[in-house]
Image 1 (spheres, rainbow, N blue to C red):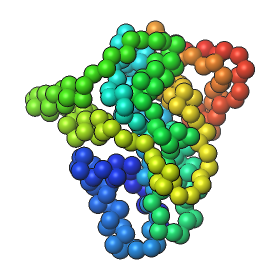
Image 2 (image 1 turned 180 degrees about the horizontal axis):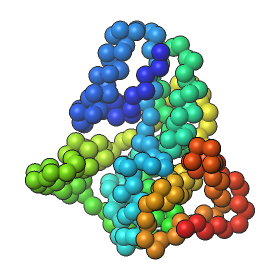
Image 3 (image 1 turned 90 degrees about the vertical axis):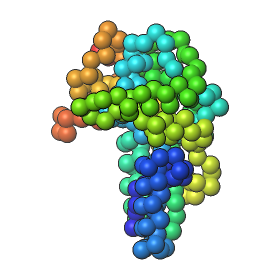
Image 4 (image 1 turned 120 degrees about the vertical axis):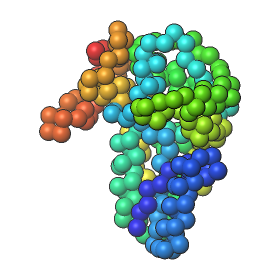
Length: 237
């Protein structure tokens, strides 16, 4: 049996979410023993993902982008690549715990993430390093503020996850070979931004720029599905 967990299960003390993922793994192993295979995806992104949309909106318009600890590493992965790797593991019958990643299991720095997001829009904003405690203060203020709408996206627990220094993936956490990821961070962020825009997200006057990829639309499932090689600079609004 395959259990889809999360890389956060590696650090269960960071948040209730991380603890619940580790607890789910432990409970499944207690019942199924050697019949359980656990898969831990890293931070995922892709079209229609509401959690990463604020990053793209900020990258499209802000003259300054925040970056956290320059030593931190964050493994990231396009959701379609994660789905392909999970599907490839579906027939496994081994007591393994496997962490997924794109072709950079060592992860990305915050500077790389922010520069790549801004690059999708052809922008090079100033990158300003901010201390983790500044996020903690903002999260505490958001949680204390009276509200009648949805819960704040940034909480103290989420800040602890975001500011954790090491979300890279070591070789021993990938004990089997899986299909190679199709998207690197630049191509994956481009695909995500195009998907957001096709769904009606307004990025203002920013233009989504691709130097090597052209989007192909699949009318069958009403999704942006595949990319074709473009060889020339393409601009998408």
